[in-house]
Length: 163
Image 1 (cartoon, rainbow, N blue to C red):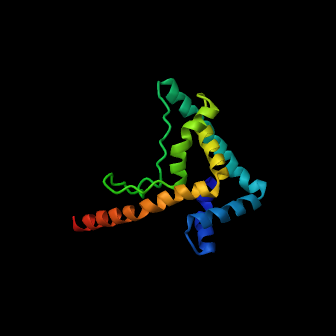
Image 2 (image 1 turned 90 degrees about the horizontal axis):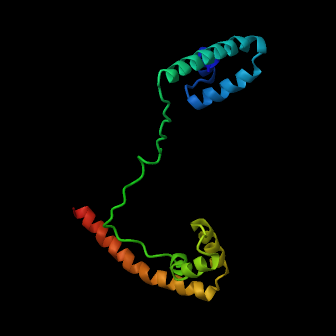
Image 3 (image 1 turned 30 degrees about the vertical axis):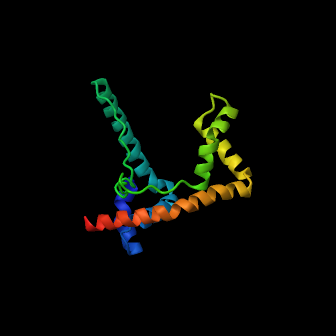
């Protein structure tokens, strides 16, 4: 990073762009090609800076300081839309309907100490083995409920636009 600080401008000029990604990629290539004599200066600076940091950190902790981990921000959190609790709910899929009917049997066969993930894996495996006629029954129930959902959704969206 110390070397990049001194060379970023010339690399960006050579590339004809200030794109952080492109400049960083090119800088990485150039750094690896740099002779050891040229990079030694920057390595020494980095070691000196690390020693200073370590000493300052020790002093901070000795004086009662506490290190806190930074909470990572979810980059998608700002983009996620809040769901309206009044919006109509989609009908359960064929699999979820089948699972509702069979979860107790699966849980019983695996025992009371079975984890949720184990139950889910077993349910998925059993669903793959279910006959097409049985799956068709659950799929038909889903398709039967779909028009009512679409109608309710259209009414809800119409009410939202009017409001």
